Length: 279
Image (cartoon, rainbow, N blue to C red; front, side, top):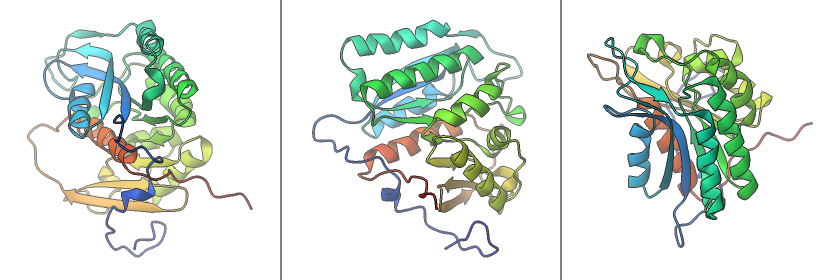
């Protein structure tokens, strides 16, 4: 195994995923339901456009709420068209689901790209509403903060919202290494530094797992591998896959990764790790 804070390294298999899921959620009656609050693009795959179909194919009931509707991803030099969803509509949609008696069936909330800073508060209001209806529901936050190299643009104030409110409220956080740095006020540049930063998040808020979706320059082999780290209070797991060349950096990969990770948590009959007892 690999001691993430030591000097030795042996690639560890990712499993067993059984160590990280939420409790008995079998499929005898209904599949898990996920309220997915993130962006939508008409052309391409990002946000809900990347996440909803794969989650449904894996047997999850998905209730998409779009924070924006754009013509295409913001990476295009030609620009994009479209508008953010009115902030109040996010809460109204959840209220409507609650009125028909379905909100208590929500197994998890997945949030991603925000169209405005104000939408962040609306998302957390929905999280509170869902958890009041189903205290076992999980909040998984993908704190999308923008990625200049990939042309990802987020509105002013969104980074601050994630660094403060999202970090304090989520059960599972899924940042990339740049977002992890913003949320912790650090610049992690090695796997060991990533683990330390992730554990700082775990210690400061309610999160029980941090999935660092892309280590990039902080990885063991950034030129050859796409690497991730899953960090708990006491353990950490590393996974790598060959890095494939693309003419334009692909988008929606992080959105897809967060969605599939959440599905894995929901479909396995186990509990999330908790902080070790004091003393």
